[in-house]
Image (cartoon, rainbow over all chains, first blue to last red; front, side, top):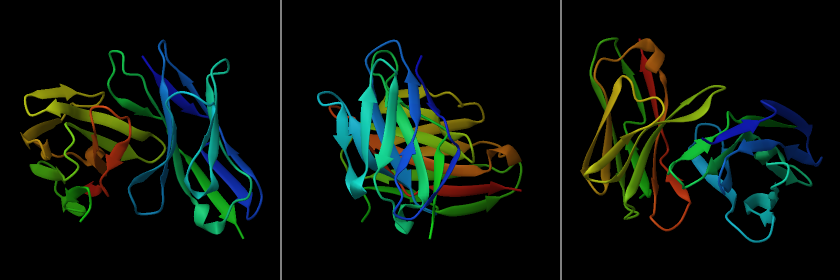
Amino acid sequence: AQSVTQLDSQVPVFEEAPVELRCNYSSSVSVYLFWYVQYPNQGLQLLLKYLSGSTLVKGINGFEAEFNKSQTSFHLRKPSVHIRDTAEYFCAVYSGAGSYQLTFGKGTKLSVIP
Amino acid sequence: DADVTQTPRNRITKTGKRIMLECSQTKGHDRMYWYRQDPGLGLRLIYYSFDVKDINKGEISDGYSVSRQAQAKFSLSLESAIPNQTALYFCATRDREGYGYTFGSGTRLTVV
């Protein structure tokens, strides 16, 4: 079985400050990892994904994430946030062996304060 | 047009009524999914389908049923709606080779 834990349900941060949204996963097999963003009253949009290769993954809107296998983490970072980054962010894991589904964390609400 | 279209966008229904949420896609993907989103709980999988003849239950399928009418269409039904099925429902697709899911804009369902 696979699971995802997002360690913070809400993260307030001032505009232009850096931010890290934390995500840990558990799986007994190799995984693929994703971050999605949901802006208010909208659907989910893919920010970035890790499938293989370099552990540092760059996504859209200046976000990046680092896959750490030993710590089973996939934290999302941005060096300088903007008001428009205010949204809910979901970490998700896919492990194809026997699962064939994307499992989501409970989400982290990022609030950027002017 | 959107790649994944959900109808209706919003719906209010009464307890005990049958309701169908529809999803259609133009991606040509085999795999389609229905998720439910509740505040503080993230997205949970209700049903998924790998093709027209292959339908599988997700983690919270009780009270729901689905129909895959064609490769492009995947409908979710609530046979007898109850208030705790009030939620935001998302349809998603995925191609066979990749791992990127494409989500619809969601249907906000309220059961009163």
